[in-house]
Image (cartoon, rainbow, N blue to C red; front, side, top):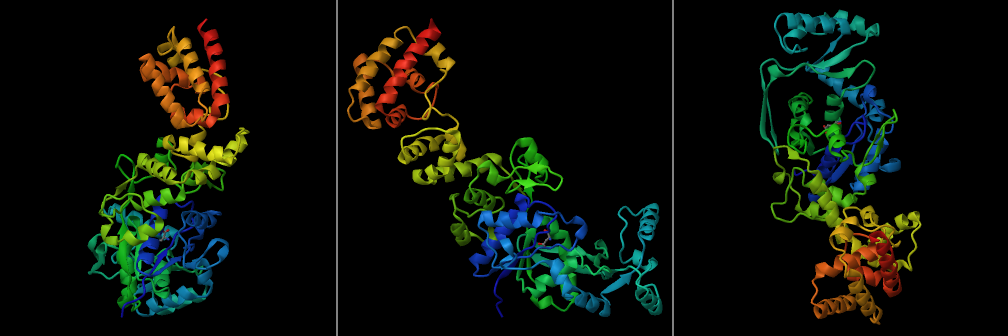
Length: 513
Ligand code: GLU
């Protein structure tokens, strides 16, 4: 029977969600929506020693910012949930299956103390074993229910002695599963160790809780980062041991996110070194350390998501700009690559620029207005801001960049030296005065009319653009470069333009004197 597609994002609240984690959530979401399935969020918080306060809220808020909404699981304010393993554990869900594994002989109690475990490792090392493990060989000389009599085991359990339950990895078997992205993965059981599944404090470990929950939640596809690939064989064995082989999910292990130069896994340190965030939102650690986030840096969430989608996947067409809905339509795991995806900070900025330019001037004006007001700039009306955005967006990566130069709000207080030295000639004041008269005579002061008159003026005087425009710009904006002067003048309006030219000429005369 065809099962309804159900996938999950299963982060552990051990710190802020890295962009690699957001990508995992995104691919799960896209896959679910593409296939008419469900996307679940499950907080895997069984390891209390690694629990970081604030991390769960951070995960929820990040997904919300990205527009990745779970169909089930914990939502912001707990509106869907709660799929929290720490809470599910209270219901005794995991213990039941641990007992089942012990009964069927696929798991066993182990009572070894930390000192005894250390001793075992040292002995093995001394005997030349490079990576000593609790496994099919060493377990026979340890204190567990395979070596102790059943009375002894019962005595220890009754006495409340601390124990763990370990999986009993079969001695000489090949474990294989087909990964959607990697193809057949084959591991010999001699390379696996008897991982702890459960502790006497009542907590299952990641492996146990993860497999049981995937089964109970009817997960059909496990889509997760490559770092979990080594856990695959153990999970496959657990499915078999528990009699769930026929409903075992398919696995898809996503490629790693690599440093911009391609050498190794992308880390927070790369972000610090190269000046880009590795977290979706700013993160305040419990120790008070602040790490930057895409949201606070001024990235649009849809640009961020679009960029992330392309880290490991491509649509097979030249199209690069995709809304979330378009990504859903285009997405397939077949087009996810095996090899690591290089993170590209430049491309990330490029995506934001594309999204900024694609926004209407009205929408941008809404975004820029609070920033303008905060700076205390004066402007005639809101439609000024709309035109302002139309003019400035072509050169901006972030909304804030549009305010990098303030010449549309305040008249220049200094004048670009390079232009003054290279372009300002003896006859410049005279030419500018003539130009000023021409501007004065334009009744309808639109960019188009200004441009026509300006060009006609150059022609009449047999002057090149380079002889007039930079100086004209200098007087009006104080800068050596910028957007269209004709648009700028139209926005400033005639009176302000003429005043700036007049004042500018006086100031420059003083500088030159
Ligand atoms: N809790 C694991 C994590 O933090 C989940 C791995 C999985 O998806 O199976 O990533």
